[in-house]
Image 1: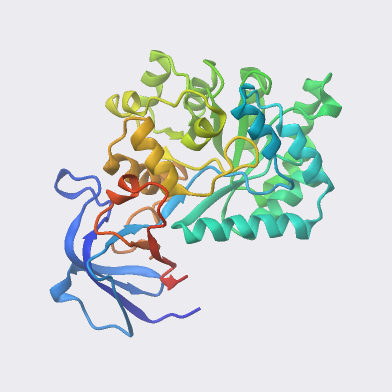
Image 2: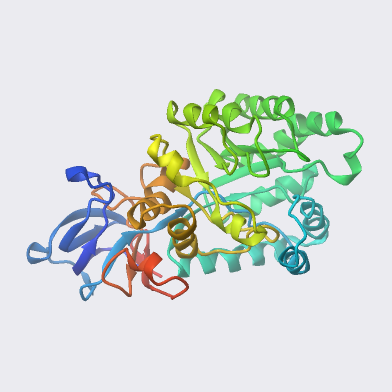
Amino acid sequence: MTRGSLVVDHIGELVTNDGRDGDPLGIRRDAALLVEDGQVAWIGSARYAPAADRRIDAGGAAVLPGFVDSHAHLVFAGDRAAEFAARMAGEPYTGGGIRTTVGATRAASDDDLRATVGRLRAEMLRQGTTTVEIKSGYGLTVADEARSLRIAAEFTEDTTFLGAHVVPAEYADRPDDYVGMVCGPMLAAAAPYARWIDVFCERGAFDADHARAILACGQAAGLGVRLHANQLGPGPGVRLGVELGAASVDHCTHLTDADVDALAGSETVATLLPGAEFSTRSPYPDARRLLDAGVTVALATDCNPGSSYTSSMPFCVALAVREMRMTPAEAVWAATAGGAAALRRTDVGRLTPGARADLIILDAPSHLHLAYRPGVPLIRQVLHNGVPR
């Protein structure tokens, strides 16, 4: 890894997310940025750019914080392309296909799973994602959940135990027994490799009582709380997440006024996953309603083989602007600082002194182009921990 000092200068538009002057993006024009020891050491006018060991000339392009993808399911085997084709032909999404991936994942070797995570993580990095959360949830046995998290921890420090993804087939008639296993030996085996615990609180998965019990056990084991909530229909998940102090409740597609009020009065982030709606032909969340109520909103890919097989945060930014009534600035903030808030991270999602030097240089003059030019590969260069990738 190359260290020493590095200056990025001739930046046409620098998105800092420092919130200065009432601008959440904290945009600076004609700027420069100094990196030392993997951190942002200085930002300012390009004319005052300090000397450094190395230099990158941005050539008037926009520079943004690296994307923070706070919801991804990367440890799996196989794919569900046929299921996707069936949905495009009119079949509804129910979440039932998760068990197909469980079977393939259990049968895969560690090396096969590691290769899939590595491939997807590399895809994400090429598209500007410098921080990613990775969940388990396709093993659903004590051994398979532990190995999923052990492999995920090789690629990120934000690992999430999702043993409560669905009730596996062998426990279909004994959901209480499965919850007991998740709270007992599975949690004990998974916790050393996890930072977070998550539950799919949804019809056909886990009800509020089961979700509360599992999340309380995770909290007692020292894990932070996240929650899949209100994706397939209205339900108790959002308010349960707020009640338990969850860092994030994710999906938030079907919300009541009480759900929105609960989020607005809390520190829980609403993480929206437009790739899932795109891939399931479902209604998109109403981001405008959440933002206008004062809720903190994040964007993430939900990268998984069934309902959102995309690793592209720029794609999700474009969807959020087009389909969820977010402004380009709101969507970029949600994909960077919002994701950091959903992971309760203060070292990423911003470009200010002391932050990790994770940044992307666009092949464009402004952040607006991420939504303005959807599907175009606009990420010219990525720096991760201050190192060009």
